[in-house]
Image 1 (tube, rainbow, N blue to C red):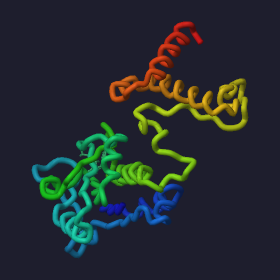
Image 2 (cartoon, rainbow, N blue to C red):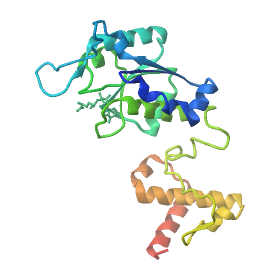
Image 3 (spheres, rainbow, N blue to C red):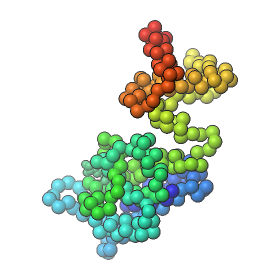
Length: 247
Ligand SMILES: C[S@@+](CC[C@H](N)C(=O)[O-])C[C@H]1O[C@@H](n2cnc3c(N)ncnc32)[C@H](O)[C@@H]1O
């Protein structure tokens, strides 16, 4: 997967992409990330990349010409890549959207700044528009990092044999079960005995049930997208019974 990130602040990306899973994916050549400084495509002496908005008002707007030139140059090298804007107006980044993006051969991610980008960039080039949620970030860089991170995890071969995107939350439609590590007891709270049993079937059943319990408490809306098995339904009945009995 080829990621091209178009930004006015390339320095923001240096460390996040040089650690852990993203670094490993780059080292294994499963992904390739290039940063492009939009300012390099500004033609005037001061390399101006923003200007005041038509109609007046607060803030600045990212100019159309440097960004258009930058997009066209990057796209000419990667014609199959999808041009993606980051904006609070876009479709929400979810696991389902990440799975969709992970199937692309490349993503050209445009990071907005200031009041945003000149709307003509959206009209002329945007193939997708992604939002992290209903809040406003100062720039698209953090959104681009989130997109690269979540998409990279889904690329086959990126996660090691001990890690799995399928058992992660949303991988099977539910929230993931709770995790514990040593010590077996902390401040009076013991690790559930099933996890210490060494019995794989017992552990599997405990995890599935707790995954259902978490989803029921925190994100019951997710159940409308999941096909529950007969065992799941039995676990949910047990959970309701346990909780009505105050367990
Ligand atoms: C300060 S914001 C502009 C907000 C814009 N004036 C508005 O009210 O919709 C600057 C840039 O940050 C990025 N951004 C802000 N919020 C975002 C979000 N929720 N998801 C993705 N990107 C976001 C976009 O690239 C945006 O162009």
